[in-house]
Length: 304
Ligand SMILES: NC(=O)c1ccc[n+]([C@@H]2O[C@H](COP(=O)([O-])OP(=O)(O)OC[C@H]3O[C@@H](n4cnc5c(N)ncnc54)[C@H](OP(=O)(O)O)[C@@H]3O)[C@@H](O)[C@H]2O)c1
Image (cartoon, rainbow, N blue to C red):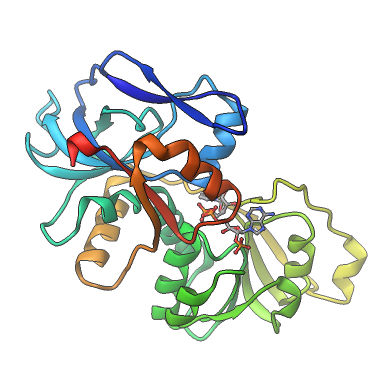
């Protein structure tokens, strides 16, 4: 089968290669991939660990159900989240991270859900009940940012989103500012994912005893925080590290929640580009270079 692999080159991050079809474990179904969605973290991984077959977010058709009898039957349209190897014609995915799609949720839409959606959902849980709270979200124009914004605003948060491409975020109910410096605090909760200078600038906007949840470093610039600055800003602040995979239990139940929210019209994946997977390298470069809003989705023509 055809699969995409890391090239180690910046101008063309991935290329096609021939690979054996995956041999599913007893608790995995074999999926004929129809669409997948790359995430910023996966682009970083292509450089850090080029041996790792890329691809975590996949939607398609079950062609071989799991041998242990769990999960959807052959012919079921599904979305799944896996550790890797999803940017390929076929993928083996554990049935505990696979969800059958209702007729009203298109395959392309579903492909954009897993990693960014699971992250937004779990960030909401970590942040606590947001009703009436003032929340600041940096790096908001990406996949995670759009999901988090829609869910947090509907939970009653007063959300300020930092984004240079914030039209949709504004429609979703956020106050949008182009840089952290323009955000008017103090905020009860800050969600920071860009790193560099944005981190201390966002931390300074926190209310006394507020919480900053640190979930990324899109700029890849390390963060410097000056202890003494905090006396003028949020004394007794809490900084929490967040990783979406630091979660008890399988991903299936949360993925099902996301699918149901989409089905109910309460969550609208923001898909900045849909392209044939032959154009994956170009789309990855656009994502890396901050040219896309929300998620991108690549489709496999013969599988559509
Ligand atoms: N901890 C976890 O478990 C977890 C899980 C998923 C994602 N993440 C992280 O969360 C962040 C958002 O993820 P995502 O998939 O939504 O990413 P994304 O779609 O690429 O969005 C990231 C956004 O960060 C903003 N940004 C600001 N400064 C940047 C810079 N110097 N370089 C690149 N982007 C910059 C960009 O918005 P503007 O161009 O509009 O400023 C960009 O749209 C990423 O940092 C990702 O690595 C963490």
